Each structure stands twice: as C-alpha cells, then as structure tokens.
Length: 358
Image 1: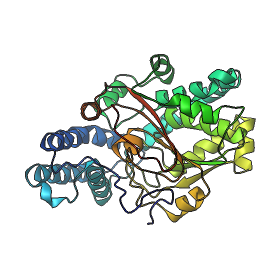
Image 2: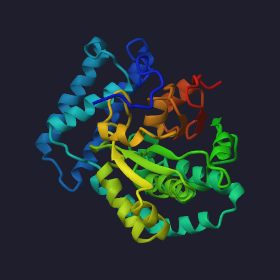
Image 3: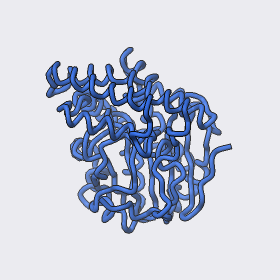
Image 4: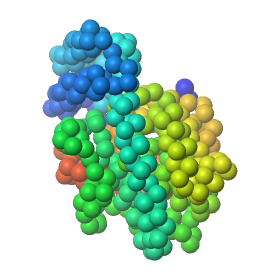
C-alpha cells in the first residue's frame, strides 16, 4: 500500500521512534505487557459472537508467548523492534490461529449504549456558547478516549463495571493539561472563523470514543463548512472501531439527528478504511482509498495513544495537524515524563518540526 499523501518528509518518516532493540528496560516491559494482556484477549474471544475453539486459543497462546520469549532472548529476530512491530506480530498470529474479532460483542454493546446518549450530548453542545464550544468538543474526545481495552489500567476498570464517559468527562481536570495547545486549535476552529475546508480524522476506539467524541466534532466541522473524512481500521484490533462498524454507527446516529443526516447525505461527513489492523498505525502503508480521501485535506487529526503518540508523534505533515490522546500506559508515562491519564492536545502547523515535550 502507498504512503500517506500528507507526509511532509516521507523518505525519513518513521512510524514509531521507540527502538526496543537498544532500550533493554523498555523491551522487557513491553514484552511483559503483551504477555500479560493475552489472557484478557482470550477471555473476550470466548465471549465473542464467533468464539474460536479452546484448541485454537490454546495453540495461539502457546505460539504467541513463545515468540515473546524468543524476543526476550533474541531481539534480533525482529528488525526493527518497536511497539508497532509487536502489535503486527500479534495481529498476524491472531489471524493465523483463527481468533477473528474477540471484541466484536463488547464494541457493539458500547456503540449502542453510546448512541443512546448521543442526542442528549448533541443537544447540550448545540446550546453551548460559541466561546466554549470547541473546548467542550475536545473534552468529549479526550473523555471518550479512556475506553481502551489494550491498556492494563483501563482493562481493569472495564472489568470492574465499565468506563463511564460522563464520569470521565467530569474528572478531566482544569487546564493546562500535559501538552495543551488547545488555544491554537480553538483559534482555528472557532465558529466565527473556521479555517479548514477538509479534514481527515483518524479515529480510535468504539463506544463513547467514536460516538460521543469523534462524531460530535465531525458534525460541528461539517456544519461549519469543513468536510470530514473519518478514517478507521479495515480489520479488527482490540476495541478499535473498524470502518464497517463506523458506517453502521453513522447510519444509526443519522436516524436520530437531522444535522448528521444532512451532512452524511451531502458527503460532508464520509468514511474510509486505512488498511490498518493494529491499534497503532504506520502511515507509510495506507490504502489508496485513504489517500484519495485525504488528497485535498488541509487538516489531519490523529486521535488516541496508539495513533497519535506511540506512533506518529514526531511525524511532519504538509498541512496542519492535531494530536489528541489520553495517556493510559505506565511505560509511556515514564518515557514522556507525564502521569497516568494525562492529556495531550497538540497543534502543529503544516511542515513544522515537532519537538519532544519539556
């Protein structure tokens, strides 16, 4: 597949800059994370719509853990070795052993629950004063991004009764956040002077994340003259929304909201598959369809820890870019120097070089 057409420096682009061949402590920690997550993944597989056999799951467990053990001893077998490569190894082996989509049922449940709350959320946004509206939209995205079944802390919280979007929204805290360039975003997205004509938004998780976070922002942008392409995985990965699931969500959401229905009918909100099958994304390898959709975009939005921080944090784009994430992984907090559940809203003008946070 081709490189993403909005990369400013495609020859030097590197999806993930965390080299686990040289970072011995980081390599051990991340291999442990993938190891420890395996049982949670298999438990979801057992309760999925099309559960694999116990024999298939046992074979997958044995084979995947053996690969992880080999990487502990012989990291040279993977070149390069980073978080994205670990995700790809897992995705490929899940397909090889027929694990399908372990999270299909939980994604559907969370999507339907979030859709039930969407009319109320949209009504509150429609009543929000213009001077607070963009910040309120972005707070909703960051709150929704907590629904992550690939990070231990949020997996544990989900197993204890779920992750409540509205409680998370109330707990986001005052600004400034860890990386807080929201004022620059507000200046460019404010209702009286929205600067963009077309945006591509790489969405993240199912449920409250895409329904109560991404959709309201897409609706707002589209209603103010900026067409929005929502870009999602083609193949399942953890609780990330797939493009097929996204299209179902869009159709159901439009049934309950006239503004969404109009923007979808006019193609001011559309969707595309990225070709990705991981919670991270390598923009050196996207679908031609994704590039066609992004060709005229003057804004790139990358949402989620995987797409916006673990990969592409230092990527340069030919157009303006917004990185959004809630940090839910303790290894990542050590690397960034932040706390668990800290927030990132970063704005980068087109072509600008991105530097690490202070």
